[in-house]
Image (cartoon, rainbow, N blue to C red):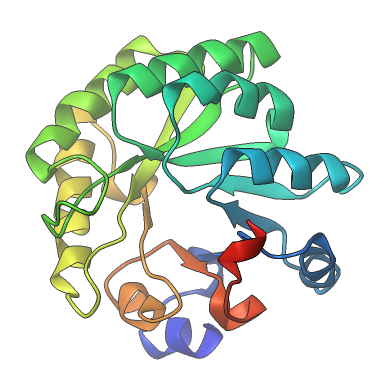
Length: 223
């Protein structure tokens, strides 16, 4: 990752590595943590709750929830992980945003939970997320109506090999920034995974979600 960042003339602190640890045993997370990795991504609410409890003594660990989240599970996730849940990257509905906002306020009235709006940049029916034209309205709602949420950026999965999906997310960020009166650079871009993070970095990613390259292939039977 370092070489990819340097190759496109960016600073190392411009890109955050989120180690995607879904289905992986806690022992592997501890190894990564002890090697200096602080940000971890999980796709399943119950698995994140369990791991965050086991690793509760790691004061500086930062959890990202990156999978689909049912609104009826939002409160349990936020309250269970607490302020170590730094970001929910898969917000695509007002209902989920509202539930997250309420849960964050119940954790602490001053707590602002980071959220990313998930965008379906490929147009695939199998992918979750907002259509690009629907991003600005939800961004404005989150910004104006939910005081315990912090709109940190946008996230996409994209289609394998279609790097134009990354460009679409960059364009969405520009539109959101203009609508909110913010600099585009104040909004993060979570894009790129094990197979394409180098290209995502070239195209402006500030967060890359890498799992199998770090932890090896996943065993979903152990989920």
